[in-house]
Amino acid sequence: MAKVTLNKVATEAANDICDACNDIDSIKKQMLRKFDDFLFLCGGSKDHFMNAKGNYEIDETEVAGLKFLLIKLYYQDGILSKFADKRHPDESVSLSEVSEMFEALDKYLVDTGYTEDEVGAFMSMLDRITEYGYRCMFDYIHEYVDMLEFNLRSYPYTYQIMHAQDLMMKMKSLFLKYTTDSIQDIVKLVELSEVFGTYERPTEELDGHVLNYGNSEVDEIDKEYIERDARVRDMFIKDPDLRNYIEKKLGRPLGEYWTSPLSEEEG
Image (spheres, rainbow, N blue to C red):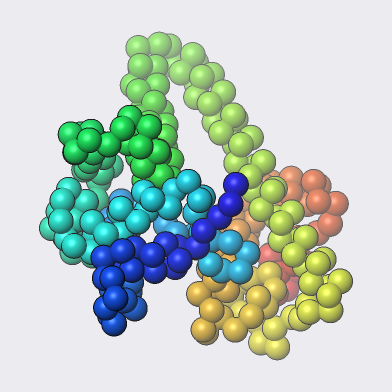
């Protein structure tokens, strides 16, 4: 499916409401700023629709819906803007508030005359960019775990332990799988950079990250990768069993990929 950049959609939206005027760039910047604030309030992030070149893009089928969203936010009109403007940009919003906004918006679109398919396509796009469904699933997971713990209270202690261990092992298995995938990605990055001759160890030892991604002082993406590596490294220090498991899967010691030692023995 063809992709369209967020910048291009914002340009088209600004042109739609400012025909033959000279302030299109200013309008586009305001739209994008309000869009960022709206995403933050909903708990979403643009990072998951960033392409390899660092541009944000959406599916071609979502362009009309996104233009509608940008224009509504710009005019500070309707449910979307009321939801965003009544809060400070740094204030988070609960899932129930986001859900209420979604329901009100759905009803507004139906009452305004949009077809069922148009409403469904727009709400699907809104769900994806705000990551609402994803957050709801994890909220439900927490609720189910709490319900399980509460309902097991009436059973004998041995029975409680058995089911709690079963749940813990299943969750740990998933955690190990995703952690292994993450480490394998790091290894592939190192190997690929070696192929292209770009791999370099930092001249100064930094806070436990894998490799020198770039100029972290100016590149926010580099900072995020460095922070991620430091968190992963801390996990290996706190959990030797996890480290042994990953090293067995990779067939190589993890100490090769960190600038600072993973244990006192390695120092």
